[in-house]
Image (spheres, rainbow, N blue to C red):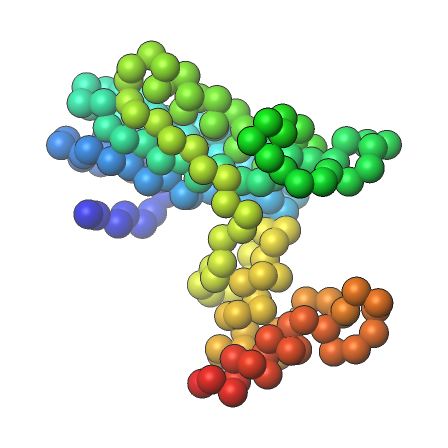
Length: 183
């Protein structure tokens, strides 16, 4: 297994990735939700152009590698004027409402089409969130989940809103006390 860091699109364009003999690619790289709304071009480059280039590079290997694509629950969204979504099940249709969700859904469709054509063995997964992201908080809409774990482990108070009734210390403070008692 080889982990690679850098600008993924540049690495693929330079033909540094994927290496000959690669039999599986896990593609969790992406610009996150809030970033994609703030910077449309960043989202398109990171989430769409890079995914397409990596799929093309896997196709060029000619060995039908396994391609695992990390999509997002952001492919689901509340339709304007409609009540919030209930449980997301096997037959719930994607209804992305933001650039990130749209880009991720397009990525899923590309993976499915490359697999249908026999260029690779494709799998798309829709994790609820990625936690814990290392480093400083980023523009992910779900970033507070990471903060609820990352900040207390660093001895920093986490902020994640209050309780359902609007009062009290909130989930983050309760979680912070539990983590500190275990460290």
